[in-house]
Structures are given as C-alpha cells and as structure tokens.
Image 1 (cartoon, rainbow, N blue to C red):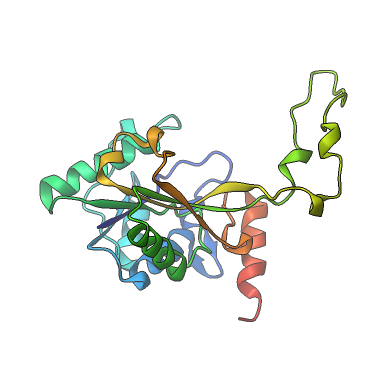
Image 2: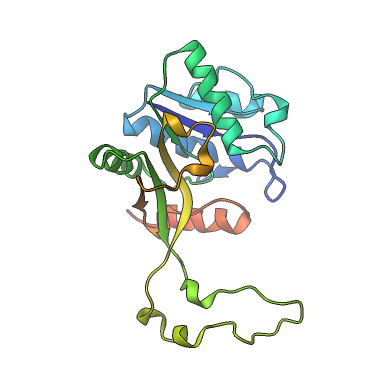
Length: 226
C-alpha cells in the first residue's frame, strides 16, 4: 500500500510552487504530513526531478530514492507515466504493490482524515478505485462555451434558467485523492469505471494550488480558528 506524491520543479503559472511557503511550511510538506499522520502506507514516495524538493521531502519524512528522469519531467509528461515509473521502482526494489494512493502536493488542505475516510470507503465497498470530488462552486447548468463573437444565444437552456437552489447539484474532481488498485497503473485513463466511487470532500479542503490567488485562499482558510 503506497502513497505517491509527484512534485516536479517546473511550473509556468506559479514557479517553485511545490516548495513555496504556505503558512510557514513548504507546500509539499502539508501533503507528506497528512500521508504520515494517516498511518496507512508502507511507503510514502515523492517523485521529483529537483534536489531541493527531494531534500525538503526527506526532511519531512517521505522517501525520495531517486530523481525522476528528465523525460518524465516535462510539461507534457503524464501522471500515468510518472506513476508507472514510481511503481516499477518500488516493485523492483521494495515489494509488490497492491494499492496506490496518488496525493498531489497542490492539495494542501486535504487532511489525514480525508485520506483515511477515502481508504475506508475503498475497503468497505471493495472498490477498484476511489476519486475525491467536491461540489461545484456554481451550477454547471450556468456554464457553457462562447463563440468568437461572444454571443450568448442559447447560453443557458430554458429548462435550466432557474434559481441555483432549484437545480440538481453537480460535482467536480478536486485532484486531492486518487486511490486505485495495481491494475490501473499504466492504465489511468480507464479509472472511471463501474467499480470506481466518489469520495466527497468539503470545498474548503479542496483548494487546488495553481496560481497566487489559490495560495491566498489557502492562507485565509488556514488562519481561521479551528
């Protein structure tokens, strides 16, 4: 049962985000500490191409047994490839993997309890996979694409032109937790099948750090009295 935390150095929108300080702590450390506190994993492995990230991750208690090859550290490198590489290393050097938990460091407010509840759901339902979601911030019925002339003709369907509380709630992937059986390694595109279930998280735990505004929101949430 392994947790894999992918953290490459490159980030165009927010350079150095994986080690940017959030409430006085490098971003990646929030995820490492949640994984350790959950007490669920035989291996907590950070896969990175950065010596600096590796040193911070090791100091926080994660394992960083290799630096990720450059061909897996580009803007076009897929999570599928990165996970496959990490699992191959674990199986060649540690032990056979039965279950993988992907924890992205850009979800720092996901808690150890979130991880534990998602894993409990995986076990209780005998699921092939669990994927975390949260409710959309706005009704999806109020969203659409726009043509080049910005015309809003037909933007909202007549039957959906209601108060938001009258519409069916919708959910989105929040990127915080992916738990999946070994069979999905190298095959993540097929994750959303009959035996995959959603673990619903609070919106405030679902902040995904992609730009400076996300950092500001996370700081505000963390500053609130518990």
